[in-house]
Image (cartoon, rainbow, N blue to C red):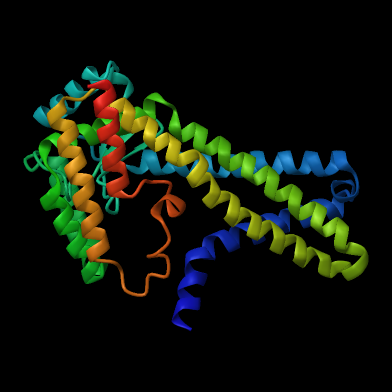
Length: 310
């Protein structure tokens, strides 16, 4: 029973999203039934829904980026700017922010690089970093289960300054390759496909089940959404992660690459040894869940890139 509850919680937002969007389509059908009965209507409705989904995700991502207020300053800002310049990019075009990233260490959103000061080294004297650490210790850490706290502590121990330099370059690689906008485009395309599948299923079954066909249309759309979303991690995001790693390899010293390899291997060992209890997804490959490579597979990929480009 506990496993079923955890599965439902994991998919709760996706279920709610599908139901909300289905409500919009039902409303549009009441206004104009051509969205179901004609090919042009289904295509037009699917395209509109894809654009709407893309917009909602763009707005949410933009709000997330703008909500981060703590900016590196002084010597810390200069160190980050120097790395940005070494990557052939203009520091004035890159936003740097401090924020908690939930074990990600750092991440990129549009043109913003987010650094997690709760695990990052060398920024202990930056007032903005201190403020974020205080917020994490006061409001986030007390709510964590012990396994997660243990993982974060060990990740901080494993993280080195050379590995940090590589990670920053990796995130800059995402910005260089325009990752966020491409991800939003993929989300929109999935929205188009899912909507069309839901509409065609409803139309096909309407004669057999009447209004009940709507249920099957929503069910098919929901299942397709899950499959395509996780499939995009394997076929899209994994490739983007590799491209960002290659970007970092081509702009890093041998020392920094080796430090990153060691760090990713250690992080994988930490996560394997300290899984969350009752985590029903623990045995599912991380490449499916998030599009990231297993730490040891990623280390092997970096070694092959280093042999070719360094």
